[in-house]
Length: 143
Image (tube, rainbow, N blue to C red; front, side, top):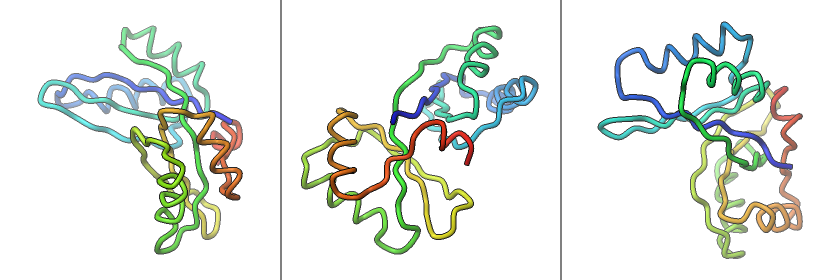
């Protein structure tokens, strides 16, 4: 049920993000979703792609520093309070969210949030017991 996410460390310089996206394009890797955070000196580009192995080879080949992390993709109703409903369940369970980001795929009325929990197995159990859909990696990569 896990989704593979790549976290790429980038110098905080003009053009660095474009270099990564060009590299992925040149290697026929499609970005499904991303988030970028920064500090004064560097940024962390977190991406989910349609072919993680191909992206890893391309990044390694160009000397990028990156890590691979398991995250959960959670389907949420795309309506006011949709995210809050899931967060209420998570809060009651005592699960800790390290970070999250979202995207809206082409599915009518649904959004997907990418969660990094401190305990992924417990999160899957809590979410599925509460009828919250956790999307498999292979399904997400094709959205």
